[in-house]
Image 1 (cartoon, rainbow, N blue to C red):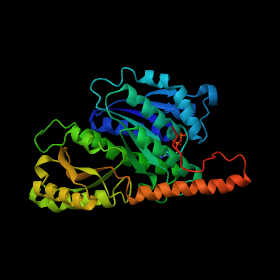
Image 2: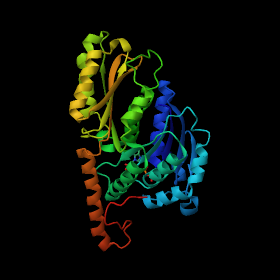
Image 3: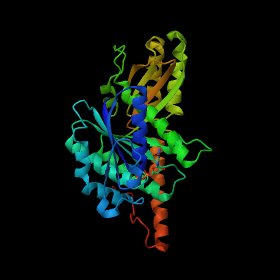
Image 4: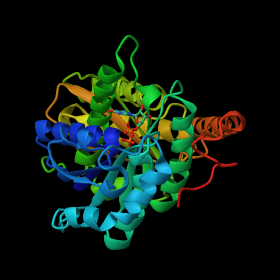
Length: 360
Ligand code: GDP
């Protein structure tokens, strides 16, 4: 799926850079172009693509300090600048646009839903959001911001591919080392998904096509992506178990959103040397995903890759009813209640919502 990436906010910019770099290293060419948008000048400086500083009249390049309402307002008023930076980048080749943002902060959290809405009005390709959920140990403000942003994004975009920071955090790493590792893990998964429909060699009936990714996301709402890989044997017959077990691991332990196993639709992509991919294993893996997710719409396909390994990439569409998303929304609501209690003793408390309002 040829795409244009727009990273909003700090996390959005860094993850966009990781995605672009993975796509370039692998020589896929699925990422056509990338743009970074932020209210904080310092966070834009290290990004290796064109950037747009918004909200200069309001925050003078210093960021919105976690205020996502301000992040939304600033994106609204400086939308024209952002849209002009995209002129000529979303070419006829583009099959989608991805807005990339951390949902817990201010600029990305507030800006992404506003931008997604504006992009949908102008472009004919699907507008997806790659959204990062804050970890459970991040403060209440992050949970509230992400809850409101997620609700609004799910409504305004064609689908939101959700990544929970907790699902990739390794112990013993510093925060920034941790983020770099998380960004690389996400870039690999999303990068492979984007490239999957782009395969040209060995194109055949079983090769996955971009339209299957788009159809899997068509139900909208929230999507999750799982990934796992294993050593491949040269003989396809010997890889039936490997395909089954990587697919199970992709859904059960390797997913961007843990416990997201109730889905409306799914796409199972098996990546590897075409001769090593067992048809029987692929069929079994699809059936297993059908049973596990309760979805009757499970698509499947191969992604021919020059590699000694086999990987299973499972895209799940429409996972908003799953336990993890409900648990997160509950966490966001609790954070609001807690904030209200604190607000009584601190009149300057930043948010004053009595429920999880939308941002737009
Ligand atoms: P913004 O610049 O105001 O949009 O705020 P940030 O992008 O810093 O968003 C804060 C949220 O993103 C928090 O939940 C952080 O944990 C998370 N975050 C910040 N940087 C990164 C990063 O590089 N990678 C990932 N995966 N998450 C990040």
